[in-house]
Structure formats: structure tokens, C-alpha cells
Image 1 (cartoon, rainbow, N blue to C red):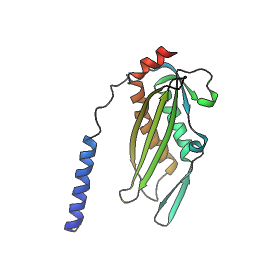
Image 2 (cartoon, rainbow, N blue to C red):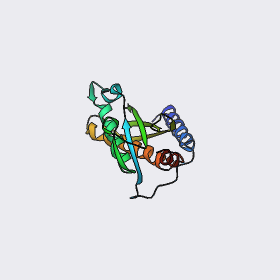
Image 3 (cartoon, one colour):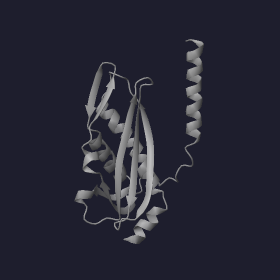
Image 4 (cartoon, rainbow, N blue to C red):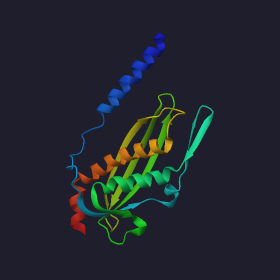
Amino acid sequence: MSHTQAMLKTSIFAILLVLVGCAGPQPANVPTGSKIEARVAISMTPEERSQKTRLDYYQRGIWFPEGEIVREAALTQFSNRFTNVTPRDKAEDFHAVVEVEGDSILNPLFSTYYATATARAYLPDGKLLGTYRATASSYANIGNVEYDKLYQDTYGRAFAEVAQQFAASDEIKTMKEAK
């Protein structure tokens, strides 16, 4: 490895350490196994839900149904924190509507896949309760990996953190009092 490459690698590592330190305080934990008694509707725009993403690397590329993966990850992870979670189009009565969206990128240089999950929670009357965001990453062995599983797992971890942030927030009390 040349001196320039070593310096670049060291600089990138230092930047990552600084960014990790900027993450800020983590939310208080909701005990594992305990669910919050609440009805939550998960919402996505039709455009977001039907989004397909193409990831290119080397001479190959793949399309994957990112919108569906985002929706399923959100439904699964919010169901782990709340007693009643359904898609918005099937929910008749709810304490909160949570609009979800995702964004991802594959960095072939570092063989890393990043997924960012965002959720905006609203009361039924449209009042914003809060915005929650988390990013997860996974090692992506380029050319030798089950990509659907990689995307599902990475989005799953990102939405697990988002659901945890919402469950641990002060807005939960506001949400339950409003209904």
C-alpha cells in the first residue's frame, strides 16, 4: 500500500469516528417484549411504494422493489413495538399515522450497503408528532450475495431503530391522550 493510500484510509477512518460521535444521545429503551398499547397506521405514497431501484456495480446491475421492502420493514418493526399496526389503507381507527420512506445506496468501493429509514408520525387530525430517522449498513459482498435479503435486513434494522425512537419519545403520551 502506498503512502497516499495509507493516508487516505486513515483520513476516512478518522472522519467516520467523528461522525459516529456526532450521532447524539440515544433514546431510552422500551423493554424488550413489551408493546405499547396503540393503533398505528403505516402510510406510503403510491410513488414511494412502487419505487424500484437499480444498483449498478462493475458490468452488472440489479433492480429491486425498494418501495415494497421499505413498507414491509416498517410494518414488521413497528409491529414489534406497538400492539396494532396496519397499512393505512386498511386502518379504520388509529392513534397515529406514520408516513414512512426509505433511501439507500450501495458503495462498491467499501462493499457496504446503506439504508436510511424516515418516519413522520401524525395524529388523526394531521398534527405532526415528530420525525424519526435512522441509518443502518451491511457488508455487501459484491457479486456473491442475496440482495433481497441484504436489503430487507438492512432496512429492517433501520426501521427497528426508528420504531424504537418513536416508542421512547414523549409524543407517545400526546398520541394516546388525543384519542
